[in-house]
Length: 158
Image (cartoon, rainbow, N blue to C red; front, side, top):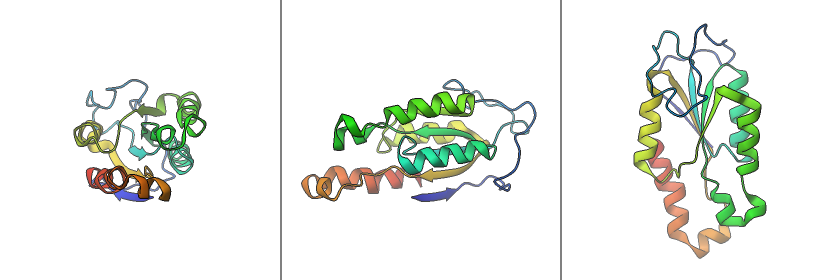
């Protein structure tokens, strides 16, 4: 997992939500450009449907962040339908409500990542990068996919 700080001002993780803040209940809510004085602090969590990413999303919402979760359910491709993250993503959407917005984006898609990051604007304070291709067997079988997900995907988030 990689934690990336943004240029925004840091507040203690326990800080409370601000009055009149926007929500992420629909795509484009952050993109609409809510004034920064009332915008919620935003965190982007990649791999939000996985074990670490989903717990990071829950913790950040509890601590006053709106969370944009990026997960394209590539686990189902790597490991089969039983390993799909779609159930966890659906649970986060239901559990966290308007404080969580799912983006089914591949971290290798530089344009999509740049759109999400720039759309979050100055409210973006934290990026938790937990998306990865974790299988050694997959890495040996398909090193190009492994490299592009793990290295190029991380580069896109930097």
